[in-house]
Image (cartoon, rainbow, N blue to C red; front, top):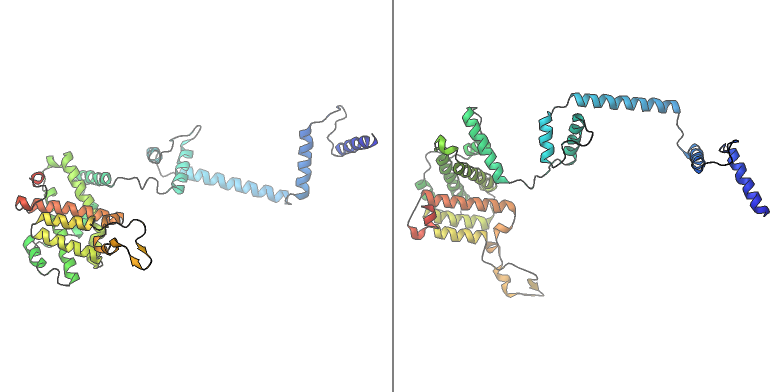
Length: 342
C-alpha cells in the first residue's frame, strides 16, 4: 500500500513540474501530457538553430518560390488548347478538381519531364506516313515551296537520267565474280531505280487522283518503303552488308533483271524465312554433333526473325519486287500472282 501511495505521489509531482494540472480541475488531458513530453524531447535532442536566422531563411525561400511561380505563370509558352491536346495524348485528365490553368500547365511540364517518350512504342508507322502525305499535299496546295522528308530523301537517292533498265542489265552481267563492291553497287542502283520509277508514277497523278484515299494509301506505302529501306541503302553505300544477305540480294537482283519473278520470289523466301531446321533445345551433346546440326548455317537462317530493322527492309524489298513485275512485265508463267498485277 505504501508503494502505491509513493507512486501516485511521484506522478503528481511530475505533473506539477510540467504545469499540466490546473488548480480549478482535478483531471488533465493525456494529449497535453504527450505534447509536453514531445516539446521537452525536441528541446533536448532536436536541432539547435538560431531562431532569427531560421526565420529569415524561411522568409527568403518563400519569396523566391513566389517569384518563380509568378514568373513561370507569366511566361507560360503553351496556349490552353496545346496543353489540353498534350494531356489527352498522354491519357491524363485535363483539369483536376480545383486546379487552375497555370497549375494544369505545371502538371503537364512535370509529366513531360518524368515521361518524355510516352506511347512512343505504340505508334503506327503507316499512320505516320499517311500524316506526312497529307502534310505534303497541303503544302502543295498552299504553294509553300517546302520540301517534305520523303521528297528530300527522294532527291538524295536520285539517280542520273542516263541510267536505265538496260544499263543495269549490262552492269549485272559481271555480278557474282568475286567483286563484292560491284555487286553491292548493282543492287543499290536497281533499288534506287525502282524507287524513282515508283515516285514518278505517283507524282504524275492528277489533282483529282491525289485527293482520293487510294492514292494517299499508295503514297503512304511509298513513303514507308523509303523509310524501311534506309538501313539497307546505308549498308550498301558503306559496303558493309553481311555476306549471306549480299548473296541472297545478288541472286534476287539477277532474277529480277532476267524478269524471272518466280525464281526471284523463291530466292526472297529463301532469304527471309530459310529452309533449315530451327534449333530448339540442345544441338550439341558431348563430342558428337546431332543429325540436324550440319544443316544449320548462316545461309539458311531466317533473317526476318533477327531483328525489327531487317524485317522492315526485307518487307520493303518485297514491295519493290512487286513493282518491278508491274513496270517490266513478262510471260504469265514467270510471274507471281499475274492476275492481281493485271
